[in-house]
Amino acid sequence: MRQALIVWGGWAGHQPQECAAVVGRMLREEGFEVVTENTTEAFADPALQDFHLIVPIVTMSTIEKEEIEGLSNAVRDGVGLAGFHGGMGDSFRNEVKYQFMVGGQWVAHPGNVIDYTVDVTNPEDPVMEGIGSFRYHSEQYYMHVDPNNEVLATTTFNGDHCSWIDGHVMPVVWKRRHGKGRVFYSSLGHVAAEFEVPQMATILRRGMLWAARD
Image 1 (cartoon, helix red, strand yellow):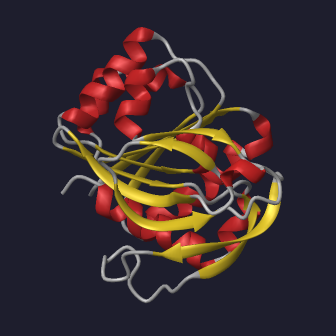
Image 2 (tube, rainbow, N blue to C red):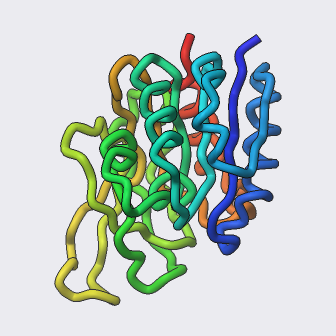
């Protein structure tokens, strides 16, 4: 049986514990044995290498050197990494090694929670199969992103809240490689209730399955 590790914590506004419970159910439905921890100390455990998938749900936190080294090494050696929104895209602001692995870092969400459109740019990818562009109500993430990402969906800013970004296209969903490991990220999912949006939940479920080590 494949094993997944969920590590939750950080800023409570993203409901990390509630989101971890939802993600845990999803993975169990897919046949994973799920271990859930609420401290980044889990990343320093040598047993991290035994997992098939790691899902961080930690926003605006800090991490010890041995913990980021353990996480980075595990992914480079083939453990999958997948996550969403600030739980993976705004976890450890001072750790460029972490951002290099994830492929991006949150920097703003102009207007806070608003209505916007998610445009599917790679409908033939298995993660996005059958999903067309859709309207979404949440924080529209403006991020610094790695040009090496394989982008699956984007969003376009309209300038209502920051005129200088009018018309700028920003990746929303991507996948990438980090060493031998597969990395998946979606900026959707501000709070646990957003898992009720079928497209959001399906994209994350499929992304986690893609990232998980065989």
